[in-house]
Amino acid sequence: MRKNLSRKIKKVLVVDDEKAITDLFSQILGNAEFEVMAVNDGEEALKIFDAFKPDVIVSDVHMPRIDGDELYRRIVERQPSYTKKFIFLTGSNIDTNLQHFLIATGCEIIAKPFDILYLSEIINKKIGNPG
Image 1 (cartoon, one colour):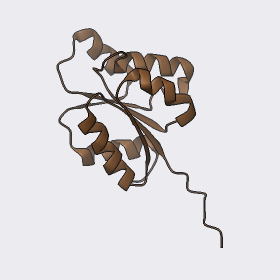
Image 2 (cartoon, helix red, strand yellow):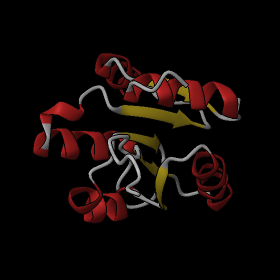
Image 3 (cartoon, one colour):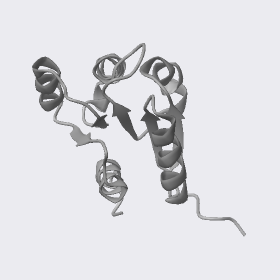
Image 4 (cartoon, helix red, strand yellow):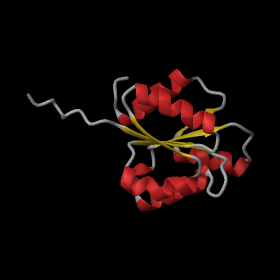
């Protein structure tokens, strides 16, 4: 008997330089039947983006090598359909220019520490799952 494969597993790319956060996402979202790829900076995210093809990207704003805003710009340059597929996390004060950029994207901006249930709701909303 064949299983019904019509339900596609949704993919989430988590980009954060804090291992505790990527571990938390991997565990919680994995338990919610998402396929999660977690990396520690924007450069790693760019390397795996084309092969992984995430449905949504959860990205820290401040990271080594490539920050969240630069990651957004580079991915949207490659794939314009990703303009609204980002959720930004920030754990510190952001300067005015960065704040204006984040608001201009129209993407969710969530402050750390965050409520994981709320973040899960936002992810489900972005990828079209009823949650």
